[in-house]
Image (cartoon, rainbow, N blue to C red):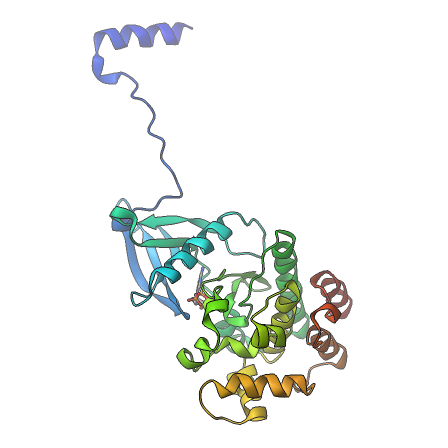
Amino acid sequence: RAIVRDLDVLEEKSPFIKPCPIQPVDPTVFETRFLRKIRELGEGHFGKVELCRYDPRGDRTGEMVAVKSLKPENGEEQSNNLLKEIEILKALYHENIVKYKGISQEEGGKTIKLIMEYLPLGSLKEYLPRYKSQTSLGTLLSYCIQICRGMDYLGSRNYIHRDLAARNVLVEKEGMVKIGDFGLTKSLKENNGYYTVKDENDSPVFWYAPECLTQCKFYLASDVWSFGVTMYEIITYCDSSKSPMTCFLDMIGRAQGQMTIVRLVNVLQDGRRLACPESCPGRVYELMRKCWEHTPERRITFKRLIEELSILQQ
Ligand code: ADP
Ligand code: MG
């Protein structure tokens, strides 16, 4: 009480040390002018991700963050998708899901950027080919389990990912991965066939279940199918010469454009699937096949996958 009284006295004497009303500083709002680009981290279908330093003091001591924005050529629809992605990621808390840090908004609120934690090791697609020799099958299976845990959590929150692939799984450190990229590519409904045209390298159609390709319907079980393809990528250490796209194109032939989807659907309907990768144990491949049941209801669930993978990992 004595201190309070002293303060009161001081205040009377000197108006300058009056405690000013506390300005609520929102730690999830990053000022665009303090974001310094270091380099590009990657580019996807609609957006790009940059490594930036958030450096309000301007002395290069600020933290590194990953900043996702839309490519300028994108319209309003994609901008809404980024807003949706931000809302989703903001509400997700799981150790196998990339952490949301905040947003950065330019004046007028016209462009918005998503600020995430930065994972220096990049995606599994960059990491696995480089660290192949030090990554055992046990570690690969542990990555699969972690992805399933993140996906099971996502499903429990009633979200469907729709773009699960090794390029969208980030490596936190050796032995630990997180799902990143929550849905710039969600509006598949309005975009049937669009990706094949735009994206030659990593067209997500090769990760899609038949019902997504034929009816543009996505279920939780459609994510399970994509997980199976992701698991295939992981077991092949993301070797691009064995990538799902390469293998499916070998299967269907390399003609251009829309026909790709039609022919892909046909081979899948005939029951053909990605082959068991070299050096992949039969029981591991069996799990992939359970993800690739034609009928969504017959596919294995993420919960079961966690159980089965844990048994195989021991
Ligand atoms: P898009 O929706 O455009 O596909 P992603 O979120 O998948 O964008 O990011 C594209 C690429 O950028 C990823 O494949 C990965 O290589 C890199 N990347 C994305 N987020 C991060 C991050 N938080 N830390 C490090 N690299 C990242
Ligand atoms: Mg991506």
